[in-house]
Length: 337
Image 1 (cartoon, rainbow, N blue to C red):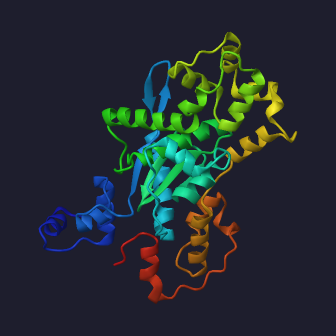
Image 2 (image 1 turned 90 degrees about the vertical axis):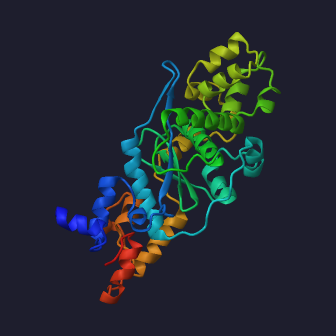
Image 3 (image 1 turned 90 degrees about the horizontal axis):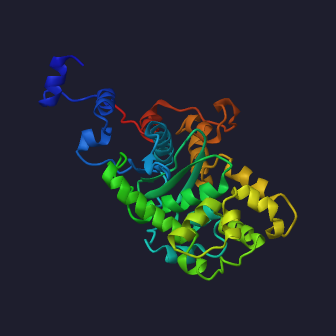
């Protein structure tokens, strides 16, 4: 804009076009909705970025730039789909959450979160950190699609802790001081959800066998490192033999002591492949398919979710008449002029 045009717009002499508002929102790092109304955009993604903790240096880090790009795409997908169901409030009491999720929840963790709390779980590639966001009241946990299933379980529990504590309340990550407080609370929640104090103290860790350790790791869906640190934090006495087993990698323990595997199939590989697969909620995908078939959305976002080219998506699209252009623009998240 020329200085004169900008001055007149700011002083009420002319209005801002949608394109100008879009450019301003990008420069000012805010939303078009806020520029137009002075209110927070109800569909804006409120985020908590998962900060990986280095136990050696006792420092945390998060690749916010990579996360931000993915969060923006996920947020657009939800805005376009217009899903109105909000998540159910998650108690901060991990014991209550564990009871609500039901026995053996670790294996179908994502499905149980959707069924019980209407919280969606997404897996995409290229991320170093997990994060949790709230989009128009819908809680969404975004994970990296790696084969590390026990790390993903911890990330799910950790991000669920953030949502339970209401940490997803701003469009940008928290300050370092806020982050320390939030990460501590989320880790405590995850630890009690996956490795509850009462359960661990019922086990005789001085005399437990390798087979029993392996069975516990598989049933609880955690790593040897997580279990070892939790036992240390709870000051549970362990034997030298138990310490040795917990010093191995999780895969090594599970394969050396296969007694937990009751059907003889390669269940470890099955879990790894599931944890490495791209995942978007079926409800979100179905909403996009329906809107595309009605000619109200292009295929671009659905193609990104499915990780395919748009040409590979076979959905009949009606011709879009001129009268529907405004509706199409609103569906895309733009302000029509």
